Image (cartoon, rainbow, N blue to C red; front, side, top):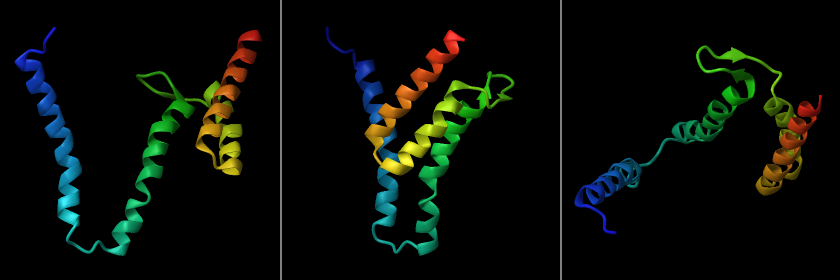
Length: 112
């Protein structure tokens, strides 16, 4: 079973489109001195992206319109998991712990 030329062209096109935004900043900034203020600003990007991805799942339900709620199993699992993450500073252990806490909370809510 071979790949058609169309599929190969799509894969190559997707690779190019993905590669260009990653390599252009490297080419542009490799020979320039980046201001310290810009570097400090860049350090906030992972935190803000994480918050933008996580908070809607923790604090809202529904799609259109979204309703703010604090009574979700995800929110109740978040609290002990974030405390565990701060204390252990271990990503793998935090993922395991958070998953177990979430399963426990969901199982408890199904029993009641």
